[in-house]
Every structure is written in C-alpha cells, then in structure tokens.
Image (tube, rainbow, N blue to C red; front, side):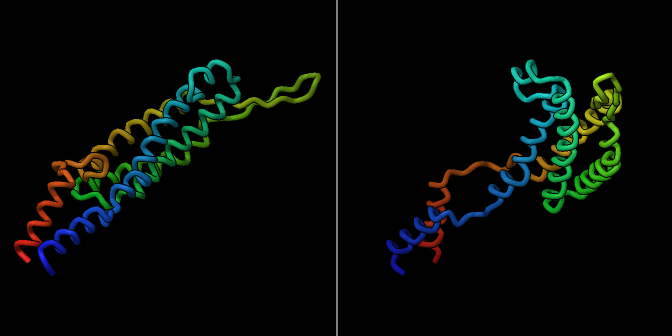
Length: 185
C-alpha cells in the first residue's frame, strides 16, 4: 500500500465513526436516568415540574404526582445501579454501590406506606381523599437524595459521568495514527 493510500485509508477510518459506543451507552443508560431523577426530585418536592403548574394544580393531583415521583426516584436509582454496577472499577466502589443497592431494597416496601386514603361520608355520598404521610415521605425522600449523591461518586471515579483523561483533538489522533501507519508500517 502506498503512502498516499495509507493516508487516505486512515482518514476514512478515523472519520467513519468506528469508535467505542461507550458515550452512547452512558447517555442512554446513565445520564438519562440522572436527569430523570433530578426532575422527579422536583416533582416529589412540589407536586409539579413548572412553577405555573404548581400554582394552578389542585392538591389531590399534586399529592398523587408527589407519590408517583418518589416511586420513580427509587426506580431511577435502581436503574442507574443495574446499568452501571458491571463497569465500576475499584473494589471499594463496588462495595459502596452494593451497599447503596441494599439500602434501595430496604426502602422499596416503605414506598407504598407514604400515602393513604381517607373516606368521608356526606349526604351526597362518600368521597375519598389521598393523604401523604409527610413524615415518612420526607424521610424516604431525603434518603433517596443521599443515596443519589453517594452513587455519583463511584460512577464518576469510574469515568461513567465525566472522563478523567485528557481530551485529544481528532486531528491530533489522525496525525498520530497516520504517522504510525505510514512510517512504522
């Protein structure tokens, strides 16, 4: 293969997109769930994502949204754990992630205990109203927030959130590869 054809081959290879799919995996299986957790956190706190919705939505719908959001926060952490546990590099971080998962398993049965329904009988009939056990709800919410924050450390130390390596330009990589192939065979 001539020097010119090797250079053309390298240009095609480098620009073909034949790279690791780790970035795509991280965006879909980690970053998406981190963003979802943050959104559900706001919904669990206020009963609405947007300020206007918080002001105009009735309390029953907000309470229902808060309860569902708390459950989804738990689901997000479970999903993040199951999507990342295999990629955790250090043993201490593996143990840390496993401990966080054990906490998530212990919390799960308590999620259904955060709300209850009261029934009122009047002349017009019975009405049911959803109520939140605010003390238990806030306790679980705070635990989930703490677990989320603790989970970010081993994820980041394993380069699953931010890369800890230097960034290289594609042009530099192409030049290095071209030089190696052309000059070193």
